[in-house]
Image (cartoon, rainbow, N blue to C red; front, side, top):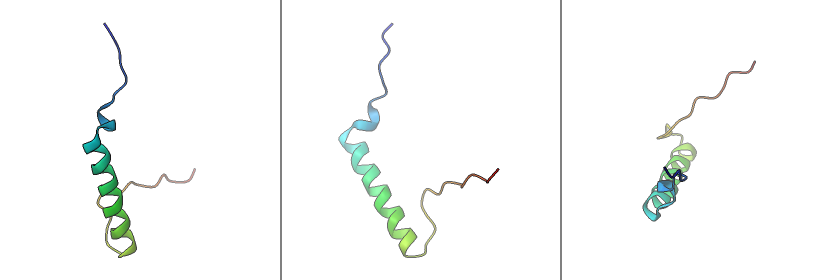
Length: 45
């Protein structure tokens, strides 16, 4: 058995999609719209 790191996230298409999603989220944020991929903030302890 050979174990290798997960490399699919390094494909050109994945990189383009990541940059596109970040751009869409930034536009949504600065235009006052909901984010496409919101993350819940942790609650303080």
